[in-house]
Image (tube, rainbow, N blue to C red; front, top):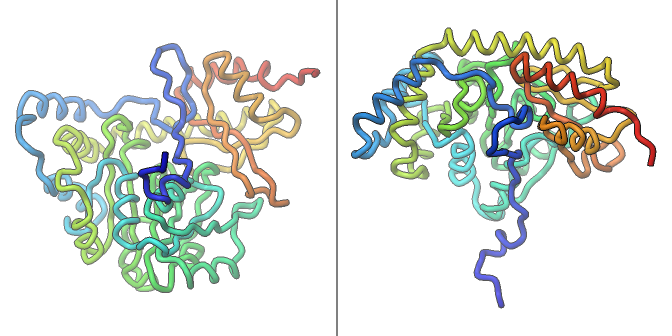
Length: 364
């Protein structure tokens, strides 16, 4: 029977998210959620909304949220576009700036959802291969700038936690298109670029930043994010978004979360302290740890297969993320490793307790 799907959909494999076990008892260090609860103000805002206005449509522009976010970033509200998770903003960007048959670029390895979104849109993908030190070839970057409509750059990067400087990002601004700075992990970085970059004349008004509440604000479950960009870009993207793309509960929760910066920053500081502890401990078990500016660590092991370590940890109900990137190794082969989310102190203690068994060499 002939397929009824578009050819682009038949060709693609689809993005596979991290495991989400539904039963309790797991130490879950695989999907970069925040291990600490959101601000009590968030819980109160959700409760008030649930008891009040769920029978009417939400504000399609999330006006109150946009005011709070704009004040936080030092811009006007018309620079802000809320979305159902930052992934929706990535979808809106793809649909707004790239037609079928055009091209996007992104550093590789990084967030492979960019490829999936491009494939859905029947858009071509160019990978900018990262070297072992997580830099790129400048001549290749210049070549891609001439051909892509969108360049997506997660900064800090996933899975490595690498941050790139403003001068490095300028190397990726398309000659005829936009540069998207995916800042999902920016609150954990010592080198975070703020909204002042949007007014930097070198970016020619073609820079967009996306933010999420799934990481630093402990709100992965509500699916909320936003984009910051020049109002001319936001105005065009607003034509593409669903009419009521953000629900009332999520808008209320996200607004309350932004209003309690002290709570978020306290949780961030706890995560950074635990990140340092884990980065110090892992080399004692034979791991090489890449310096991270995010809420996770990318690590490799010289003598035990990464898949084996992942599977042995899973047997102990400890989940980390085993990741592999075909064509990303220096010799053109597959690069793989483990990405470990920074959990609570007891969760990391449990990981370190079972880790010696996971890296123990086994015959056969």
